[in-house]
Image 1 (spheres, rainbow, N blue to C red):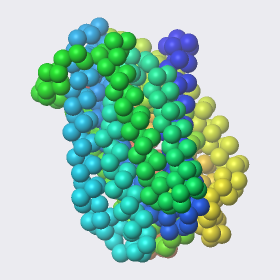
Image 2 (cartoon, rainbow, N blue to C red):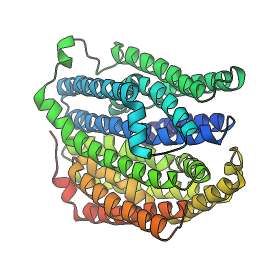
Image 3 (cartoon, helix red, strand yellow):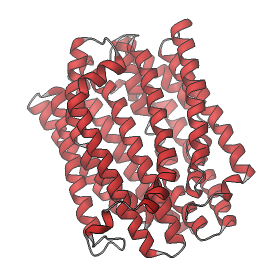
Image 4 (tube, one colour):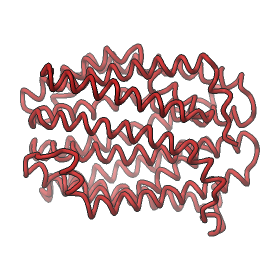
Length: 440
């Protein structure tokens, strides 16, 4: 792959991922000034939000693979029709999730996290309902970003993300520090920023400058053939991401029994590790598009060459970021208003993460996107689910509930999960069985 093309594709993706991750970080930082109860409430809901967002990402991934393969095959008309079907799927899902959060939010929180402190429950419920409304706009944004990436236009979605983040930071500061709205202020700021981003993205999709613009309403009517192709990737990816997040929710429910300090430290840990993962995540997003186009064009050798090149790049970036995290962890954790006990916990798990992730993280999270780009999503789903339930859940339960490792036990379970899935994906990749898959 040409260096200029790769640079043009990757740099905006990295910037966009940095901006996306910073939304959660800003929310946590702002709400930490309100108190640890607020941090815990937002942290619990973030696990639910991540689940829903991951499923959205899975639908987007399905659309990206189908559209990219049609584009690699020079079939522009089917690329446009696939975009319309992706929009329809995303709208149905996001509206459904919004209704569940609004009308069944308290039941959902009680079912997942059990008997948490009442003030934490109230903060969590407030954040869940308001953030749930934003899913409709977030779905529109994710759809638009996916369609633009298929055209290798990552700069536009990056700029929209920049606008979203600026709005989020400004309103967060105003609502939390100026109006003293606490958790509600953080949630409303997120809603406003996502609404603006969704509206802007929809206008961009309708613009004549968009080569995949949909001009006929009937194109949005479900087409079984195209929906099936999208869901051939979207459903396995959705199940994979969904089960992954459900597993994390179960693990967080264990953490919830360890007290407010553990909940807060675990939340900060999850927030911080998103940052050093940004290059690998961004390269993975590009990998889906690139491999999809290679496979659509029927060039398997190029798919192998591109995937190896991008995996090497991932390792270089990932090692740099993880080693920097190890050095900067105490300073990063000190930015949050945590108790001494929570601070010590957060520093410990983050430093363990930084070292343990070095050999395996790119194989666990970037490499499978090459398989997905080729259409081998069922294999990645199977490995992810088995590894999550047999490794992360079981190991975490044993270490936390039997041997009283605290939140470190939860993170060790996560590390074991990564190594199992990373090795499994590597074996599949070198077997070349993923190259026999094709969606179109």
